[in-house]
Image 1 (cartoon, rainbow, N blue to C red):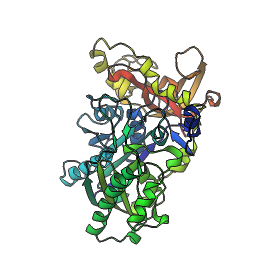
Image 2 (image 1 turned 180 degrees about the vertical axis):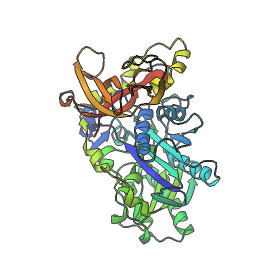
Image 3 (image 1 turned 90 degrees about the horizontal axis):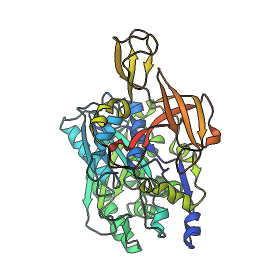
Image 4 (image 1 turned 30 degrees about the horizontal axis):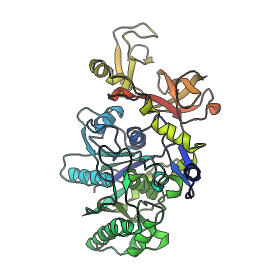
Length: 466
């Protein structure tokens, strides 16, 4: 049995009400909100957050491959998957691959992962996605798009949903694209584009998959379709014979359309309410369509679930204006720094700054960060061991810094006591400065530090443990 062994997602804490787009451009706007990155987030950090949620469930010792899928990865030539593998503290023997070029990149990575598992080359695979989607300013796509990250792990043990079948359909129809010199996604939005591109492709792959496996529409518990506008998914599902009660809400009103991050995010939402034996049909659009037929197993009853997608979406901060929304998206573009002088320093500090390793004294048990040659507790120099630090802790003390240069003042500078030992000095993100208290539980997260030409742009921050 090969299938989904865990799911994770991350929707940015910040949102912008769509009414602000109408106010900024003096036109009608839709209802609801779009998910919007904070200034220190990008596709990589969104994917990292989602991947961490999966690893909290399955652990990072069993994962032997990581695939990253995105149409908005921060580098054209630099493996985001390899960097994420280091940030997740996976083995250097971990196989890494990047997928892009299409909104189907996430399900393309999943299909490649299933093939690798079938060939016995891999045993456990993590597929992470992250999207930061920028529409043309003033156009409706700017408010329809959304930012998010999602992830799944595939394997043979403790399978939550068995993958019973896969199908794909390719189409060269032009409706959405972005060339290497384009700052924004280009579209030809129209009723024809929706019917010829989105609906036709999804209906074709959905019918093919159901017929191949002898499944009737009424036998499917939930059909999962990412929606480009909050409506097209419903019409498409009904063409396949599904009733309204079977169609999973794509959460378009709460976050928008997050591109390649949508399929796994919605699959996670479907599994939160699924029962053993349920059939799930996941359909994903992008220059054609992919289909995945899944059957939920008894393992779903054992899965710990502390919160749901609706809980996750309810925790948010609303940007006060369209101008703030744009400022957060462009801040680092306007504050670039020079190149690092050498990659020698980057290599030397990977274990400490990317993998987040510290020092454990085997004599007195003290954990320290950064890596050290002398124990701060017993002054021992001989019995020191490099170990990974936990990714959670509590605030020991903090200050509100009004002088630090950032687009959102004040900046919370905190000292965090990490679980099982270690103390770090970190910026805090995704929080109202007035809500911070000593003793608050926090999670360590990877965020953008500056804009520049190297992967040293990223470092650790902390955020509230929601």
